Image (cartoon, rainbow over all chains, first blue to last red; front, side, top):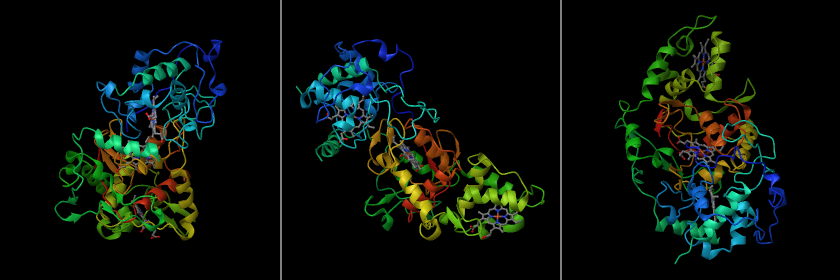
Length: 158
Length: 283
């Protein structure tokens, strides 16, 4: 099987350094799983978000979702719903909640939680198959989440 | 539920490129004579979890499917020849070969693969075929055990499996094997790793769907050991389990570990009724 999904963030400044950044454990979800507050205070960059969504080594969201806007990226999966129109269906806060921890919106979802660092069963060190100590680095950093949310917000039917 | 329905709709509207995809109705007949059951009624213990059970063969491309239909095209058969040579070669302190005690595999190993993993009364444990082979090597021949997922082992498993080709998988899950089976079942539904995915998430809830470039099957092991075009060798089921768990960003288990033995028994039992296909061909 291919390494079909997200590689951990290897480098990058420690997330804690930036004062405005909300740490994974401090994210506040409302009753429906939405996250009102930006994780960084810096507006997301949709172009960068698109790159993360399509990149096998980053979000690799296309492993499970078809997205017409990314039709130049090969091999879109069919495990999750098509994301066309996601920007119409969901508010920014809802999208942030879905990407940060989809299980707060969709109970038991198969979609991975991208901004979560603890609470795993046999967590591994990336794709090495070796054990790793929690907290793990989140699958996406705070600003990457904001970029992905900004990209999803552009996915309108019209 | 709303989102599941949407998934189905999305899949219908934008059918993935069918390029190289299997013909859903193709049937597997090997060498023009061994008729394989690649799709059948699920065993009762699945309690409706799957509407039917299907061999991984059905999910592969036409070309890959065809390679398994004739032993002259099946690259896995080379290893069977090698194992036949090993079968006849004396090794170890007792100066014995497999043939010394088991004569020809065609007579002594008929139907064996179909019922493994199997409870061994004397040892008081569930044994996989690989464990049994190594037990004979160590305790009957006085020879070194083979590496659990190594090429000598997978080749010997293939040789033995040939004598069950076309027979239905029929592993026992009750009696003394039951607790091991239950352990395997629990593992099957456990969402391991940072991606929090269980075997069932991919192989029960999503078989037939594409995940990136991969066409998900039911993850059955009736075809093991499997010749993979990807690594051009025979692969054991434990090596496959290891890869699948690793890809959920989890700490894997060791091939041959009690956990993987339990998982093998459980996964094998999900395929009770499918034909033994080994050595099968997959991508």
